[in-house]
Length: 528
Image 1 (cartoon, helix red, strand yellow):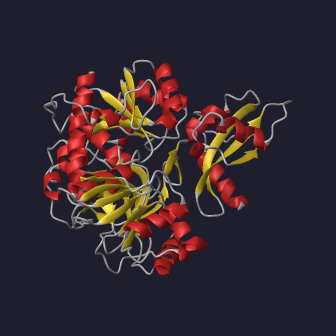
Image 2 (spheres, helix red, strand yellow; image 1 turned 60 degrees about the vertical axis):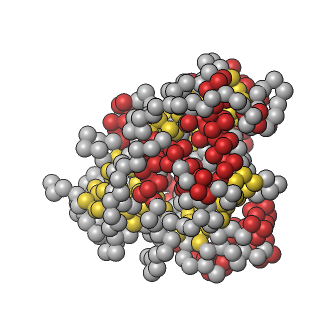
Image 3 (cartoon, rainbow, N blue to C red; image 1 turned 135 degrees about the horizontal axis):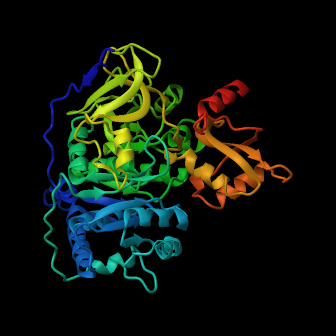
């Protein structure tokens, strides 16, 4: 069988960046000086680059004084705040890897991540403190919980800023030492710790630079969460590396979002499809001056081409830009450049520098090349070090030649633009958040009224992918759709909730016992 065609970036190669992430991002902080680095979009609190760098160093000193050592893992459990970046960089400067935690995680979910990552420190915020305490108690091994604001009985990051402890001098190996440990379900299964080295993340920033380059002072709005690799890169690392001003919002509230754009003269938006939908259709948009906007970049989940067009036309902007990647790729592999013109509708972009891609035919198909469709494989310096403590699962996604098998199906057009057309993987993307069906199925099967269950992603009325459960009820026990949804909702974060239920006599399975989700998806299409 012929080898699949390999695609290369049209951009000049970039060297690997062998710097700790805090130096790769804040290395020019002194040059940017009194420029605003971070602005709280709610109350206006501002940190300059001088302050951000100083605060990062003081936090590192205080953490080291508290006992944090190189190789420790610190769990950062917080919504977006102006404290998030200095805590992240302070922890890495002290030698820790940061495992980012969803602020809406339940105590049980948080505890699983703490146990798996072996995190010994937590930084949270007072509204989430009770969850963090319960998680730490369940997990064990947590030495101390700090808060970014104030809470009785817990030391505050604010107090760290007055620390007189010496700044730690940590010798890091950027190629081997971990900077971040986000959790991803990969192509299937339960969440796993993705080992991203300092070199992985810093080099990916250099790869994205020629396509997303901006001038110092450029203003972007950070409403997507920093804990997600998309937000961590596009809204924190990348803009702060370039001297931009990041206006920070804790969550997406449309009125607050629109007001922040108008008040702070935001120029760039990095969003997910649900925000594009609001910008395209919500009447509140007309009541705000959004004329400062220069572009909108959408990623994290598939975007409908007609919706993208409606949004750009309403805002009077060039066509919406898209990007592609995954947590295991640090995360970026494809971007529509900011200066691109005549971009084909629906494309997720061109290959970033120093990256190879191949399109591998799916089982039973033949043909590759510019018109062929197949699974997207990626090779480059941004490929993760592996899944923490899971060599077999690492080997299942990264082959012996270094190709990462994304589980996404795509094609490359004659102009070299990638179009993602389907997913091999079973992961559900609800508003950009990963929802593993296997996790929800495990929860469903804890209900004694449920004999069997399977979960797939279906589209709601707005085109968002949502979890739908097919449930086989136990004989003789009354069970309603509301019962099923309530049982799951009580045990998972809100974004993971089952949102539709269909009762069935049997779950289709292969002889091995594996759920045949393809049959359920076909049934769904037939019903539609």
